[in-house]
Amino acid sequence: MNAHFQFNAPDPQNLQVLEAYKVRAAAAKATSDDFTGWLERIDALDGLTTEDLTRIHGQLIATGNLKFEISGRNVGLCYKISDRGRQSLEKARAAAVSADDNGGDESAQDVAA
Image 1 (cartoon, one colour):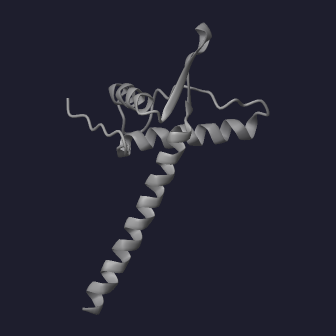
Image 2: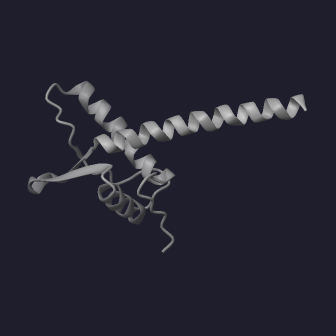
Image 3: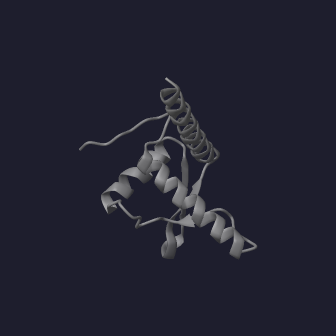
């Protein structure tokens, strides 16, 4: 098994799942006055297999990026992005912006040379 596992910086697949939960939470919050932040498990996501999602959920829980709770027989496990998960998404976004900015600066330097 070739799994990427980092405690400090989630890999792109982990960030993809966190982002999917963030989008779901925003949609649920917009449509429900009593939304608590807890969501049913994401069982399908473009580009990820069921095995990928199982591994990613485990990694996100182990690293404190995702919380879970057992919610009755009908729903099963529910998930919520933790504060750390939100911070991970923000850091990833900031790093992407910084990389884009650095790439643009380097290109401008290359053109000037």
